[in-house]
Length: 241
Length: 252
Image (cartoon, rainbow over all chains, first blue to last red):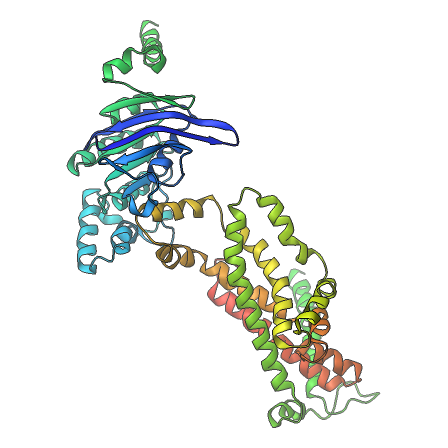
C-alpha cells in the first residue's frame, strides 16, 4: 500500500479526537474521508502531513515509517480549506514558489510555471495578486503551486468548502482531470456527501474519532450510517410532491 | 469656517516649534521687545565648532536609540511569535505588559540594584539594556497581533512544501512583516529617544543624552541652548514621520 496509518490516536486536553484510526491509500487513487465538522478529519490529515505528532500509532509511506519524520522531508503536501496564497506574491510567483524553494534553475522554473498556469487556464492572470483573483482562481493557483512540485501525496482539507456551488462543481471536475493526468495520490476530506462520492476512488467515514473505510462505493451507499439513504429519501420525497 | 478652524489648529500646533526655533536663533530678547533681536546662527555654529558638546550628545543619543530599537524589535518579533502560539498566551501576554504598564522610572528603581551589583550602572551598555527591557515589552504587545492563525498556516504550508526555517523567514515571514518591523523599529526608537527617567537613573548622569541636556539647560536658565537641544531632539521624529509617510502608505 502506498500510504498506511496504523492505530493513530490523538487527544487534546483529555478529549480523544482520534481513537485507533487505520487507513490505507493505494497509489494514484483518491481516498475521500467524509465526516462532520470537528470529528477529527483535519487532525488526521495533519498527523499524516507531520504537522501534529500522534499520541499513538504510526504512518508509513511506501512501507517506510515516517511517523517521526519532519514535514519538510515527507514530501506530503497539505492544502488548507482556504487557498492560502502568499499575499506578497503574484499568481506566477505563487505557483513557482515550491520550485524556487528547491533552487531549480530559473529557466526551468519559468517554463514549468508557465505550463502549469496554462493547464489551469490561469495564463491571463499570471501577474495578478491574490486579492485580485476570484475564489475559484485562487484555489486553482493553490493547486498549481502544489502540483508544480509533484508531491508524493496530496492532502486536501475541504478545499472547495468556501466556493459557491457552481464554482465548486467546476473545481471538482478540474481536480479529477488533473489528478488523472498527473497520477496524483490524495486524501480528500469533506463534509459534503455528494462530494465524497464524486471525488473518491475509495470512501471512508469518520465518526467520533473512528474511521470506517468501505470496500466499495456500493457498500458506502448501502450503509445506513453513511447518510446516503436519508439523502435519497429526501430527493424522492420532493419528486412525489 | 472649516478652513479657519483648520488654520487655527495648524497655528496652535506649529507655534511651540516656531518658538523653539526662534529661541535657538535669538541672540538677545529683552523686555519690552516683541521679537528677539538680532537673529543669529551663533548657537547652531557652536555645535560645529565644538564649543558645546551637543553634536557628540546627539550622536550618542542616536546610537543608543538605534541600538535599543534594533535589539528590542528583533527580540520582540521572535518572542511575540512564541507567546502568540503558546497555550498560556493570556498569562504570558499579561507578564509582557508588566514593564510597559509601570512607569520607566519605577522600572529603573526596580533594576538599579541589579545593575550596581553587575557593575553596569552609569554605562552606555547599562542604559541600552534598561531601555531595551521597556521597548522589548512594547514590541511584544505590538507583534502579538501579527502572529495570527494565517501566519501559522503559511508556516506549515512552507514546511510541507519542503522549505527550511531559513527559507520560511527569508521568502515569506520577513517580506510579510517588513512594514510592521519598520514601524516597530521607529516606535521603539522614539520610546528610547525621549526617555529621561530611566536614562538618568541607570546612567547616573554619566551617560548624557539629549533629553537630559534639555533639562540641564533649563535648570541652568539657559533658554538659547535649551531651545537648540530641543530642536535637535525634534529632528529624528520629523525624519521618521516623513519616512513613514513615504515608505509605509499601507500602515499610515
